Image (cartoon, rainbow, N blue to C red):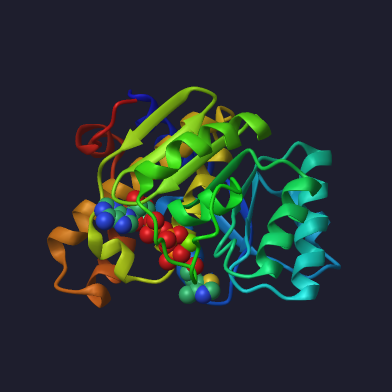
Length: 263
Ligand SMILES: Nc1ncnc2c1ncn2[C@@H]1O[C@H](COP(=O)(O)OP(=O)(O)OP(=O)(O)O)[C@@H](O)[C@H]1O
Ligand SMILES: Cc1ncsc1CCO
Ligand SMILES: [Mg+2]
């Protein structure tokens, strides 16, 4: 079995508990996507319980889409607990660079615990790499290719894996640059596909210790499910529904056969 297929197979057999502290916009979609792919989602952000939930989870997802002071406290506590319990942690720096607050919070979170994986669009990842201030809102305004050089430095600085999503997804660890070329523009017409990608990275990290492989498998699952959903859909509404069905239906063999990658 190919390595991506094996990661998907393990999600289905182990059903990892994925702890999400995510935004109000995507909470429901993200939980449904995780269930569809075979993982077990839990959305928990109360300061009173985040440490307990991290402790029983296979992975932690922190997404800073809709920040507020209390949630930031919970995010920091959760990240610190993940470090203590060695729980793999993926960070989605939504809109970082768009406001001073987002930039400050992203830095605080990454200081509390180094994320095993950071996933964002090119503008966000570039903002994080402090190479640009071009992030506007939460959508990508920069060509992905421009970001790769700075991102290699970012991944080396944190000694982790950084994913730039877009038309081509780039998964970068040290000097390894893996690419996933599946997916389609419809995926950017639905809110939260990036957040879903990050949550699927969380599911993969819950069953696969190699963060580069986990992140690459996650982007492959997203891209192939996106291709299959696009064939059945006539617009963003039906795409959103079909995407969940395709995450549920995709088999490890179909994933291995349809993925377009250099990995
Ligand atoms: N033009 C495209 N072609 C192929 N795949 C795409 C395209 N645009 C986005 N995707 C896919 O959509 C998913 C989300 O990536 P995107 O870069 O749009 O995230 P994002 O900007 O963080 O989204 P959001 O903030 O709305 O959640 C990824 O799996 C990516 O591969
Ligand atoms: C639209 C939007 N605004 C804050 S979070 C979010 C979901 C996509 O990141
Ligand atoms: Mg995003």
